[in-house]
Amino acid sequence: GGLRRKISDLPGSISVIDGRTIRESGAQSLTEVITRIPGVVAVDEDGRGLKPNFGLRGLDPNRNRSDLILIDGKIPNGTMYYGDPGGYYMTPLQQIEKVEVIRGGSSVLYGGYSVGGVINLVSKKASAVPATLLKLNYGSWNALTAEVNTSGSNGKFGYMVNGVRRQGDGFRERSQFGVND
Image (cartoon, rainbow, N blue to C red; front, top):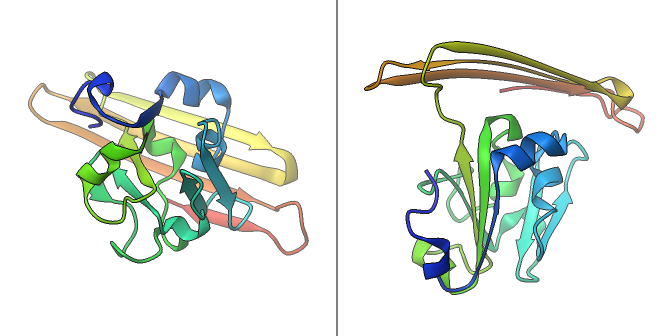
């Protein structure tokens, strides 16, 4: 997934955050990663990274109304194409290998809802050999992120099963949360 053309051939400004940068950042949400890109304004609606709001090219970040957020360059993220994708489901960072942000003239190639630009979330792919990975992160306010990933491939067919649990107490009263994906 991702851009099929050379970045240098596309008009406008394009930024890419690769998997290594994501892993080394220690980030637990897409909001924490995407704010590293110049010109991106991110507002975390719930303080947990579950409902992020992104603004590109100086446009309002409220509920991503000016940006098209895609998964693997094809599938719109969210339940309604012209709705408020930031108010619904956001792909967990643990399932993303790379983030591509396209601003300027190239974004119109993706159709409507892309006046501010396009944020393309490139999914992790299955490993070439069968493997199971368990990751645990623990932090302040009893924040816990647990991930189990099993994948493999026989050359023609690949599979991946990924489960993520995020929970914590939050830094304010009554801000506990628990999310399974």
